[in-house]
Amino acid sequence: MAHQLALSVTAALLLALLMLGLSLQLGIRKTVVRWPHHALFFAVCAGVLLSGGLALWAGSRGWALLPALALLLLMPRTRPGRAAHWRLALACALTFAGGMWAAW
Image (cartoon, rainbow, N blue to C red; front, top):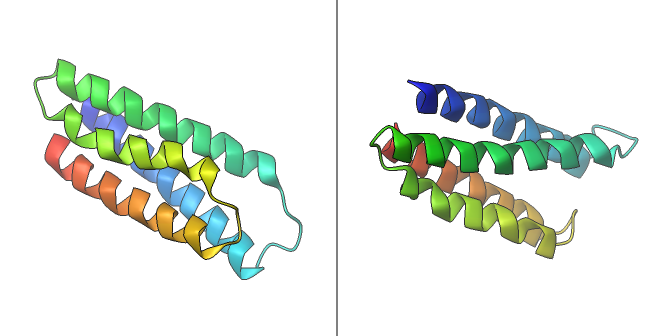
């Protein structure tokens, strides 16, 4: 199914986004390259929206991804490097995982 492929690709993008953010947070990457992080963030937001739409079109529970999208859209309100940023990122990932399970 198309929505399952979209969910899988979005999950991979979200994992890459989390790993890049974690490497920046822990200082593993010495130079801060913000544009890949922002590009991945945009791709994840678009992927969640696309996955939800495709799941709804396929007759699945695509609405279950709306909380993950809402949390993702709150991310710019937190400052990078602060505890609120990584906590919200973790909440986004867990909410997406639950929505992915429900929409699968």
